[in-house]
Image (cartoon, rainbow, N blue to C red; front, side, top):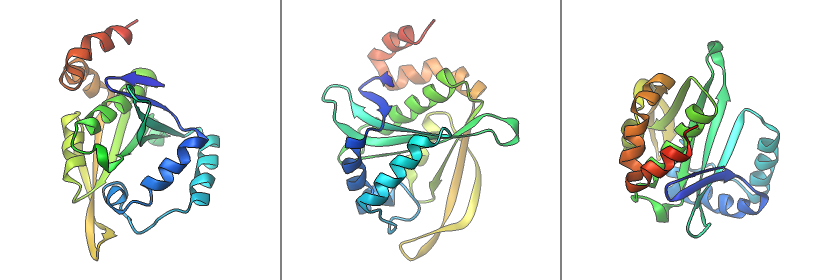
Length: 199
């Protein structure tokens, strides 16, 4: 579990699955989450994936919860791998559309970077997003990611082929901007968080 700013990232629980099922069958949410919004999941499929993920040590699923109300508002994930001998994580997130445009995407991304680099000691984080998801690209770049590649015309959505944008950030790059980024996102809560995570 990580408490940071207005949110908590905690493990999924079985009772969260109805929320996840609702989000993953909402057209707008999935349009800006995956590259294939028409691929809906039944509740049984959601339950099966949860049971598989519970056994998968390479996939760390988090529920994003508002600290003040304990309300789940989205999900986040770090998919671990060490391809080429470099420990890395591919991160992803989506939020309930009622909470879009509130700066929470930056906060969740910061939380994932903190888990990846400050707690898991990974060497690199990656994230991918469909071409039209400009908000996601801005959030990633704000948090220090650099776009390193494009898979051209590789995702088919809404009758059109779109590019798939790939971003990454190295551990040393994050550590260089960590305190400044925490200050920009957490504002008056930054110092308390930095003290809490300092040994």
